[in-house]
Amino acid sequence: MNSKDEIVRIFDGDKGDSHPPAIFTQTGTVGQMDACGAYWPDANFDAGKMAELALQTNRMFGFATVRVPFCITVDADAFGCGIYPGSKDAQPSVETFRYCPEGEVLDVPEDLLTPEEFVTSKRPSIVKDAADMLAKNEDLFLVAAVNGPMACVNNLLGMENTMMALMMEPEKMYSWLKAVTPHLTEFSRVLSESADCIMIIEEASSEFTPPEYFDDVFGAYTPKVIEGAHKGAFCTTHTCGETLDIADRLCSLGQDGVSLQTDSDPEAYIQAMGETIKLGGVEPVATLLMKGPNDVLAQARQAAERGFDIVTPECGVPPQTPNENLMALAHYREH
Image (cartoon, rainbow, N blue to C red; front, side):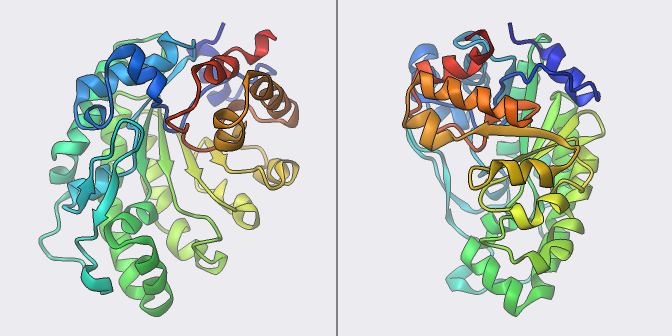
């Protein structure tokens, strides 16, 4: 049986040999929506529906973890960007970049929301309210996600615009990173009052941010958000894409655990990640979505054997993931 206690023990330093299954990334699927009646897009904009859908990973499958929110647009919405609300099987996405009209990155405005205004605005408040509801389930390990500074700026300016600005106008980019860090730090702190773990989503892949910018972009700002999370919770970070050449630095920002996309060379990643708590080992699309329960079982067992401390999907769970595959992951140790 999966339990919150075995996950807490790992974060407290007793890794042992349990390798519990969990989900620290996006959890919402159509199967869970059909079961509980809380559907996207409403469950992304209503705290009660968000909490109800989040609970299904435990109620339907037996995971000890529950997680909010289901998307990465909360910060962009709070800062005034246009948001496409999504659909039953599609997450919300940023539709218009308020601070980069026609591809021109604007200076940080003097009237940018304060951190206090940010955390009490509509979307952050919805996530906080949902987390408060979920926290009443004391037997469950609650994960709440916050974008890191680079992920937030990507949302505000657009990824392509951000990458161009980093190369052509780095000081302007650094001013944006510096500007949003207090907001994300405060959001992490506020959510840590309810959550057991804050997962910081950061766009650190070498495919988008050249490694030579790592210290100035991530080393300078992400640790501050981690400090906010540590006011009341454990902290993990997650990055999609190829990160092998910076994996050791990604694991040295002050967080407790790290989730990376390791499918290109799992053994090399395990070695590069060192002693940090390692989350992952299960491919969300190639295995969870596209294959069957036996394949999920095999990959989960392999993840444990390789040394993943907590066996998790390595990115968000695809919305069309079959129920039986999530059930297989949740109970892989019983087979």
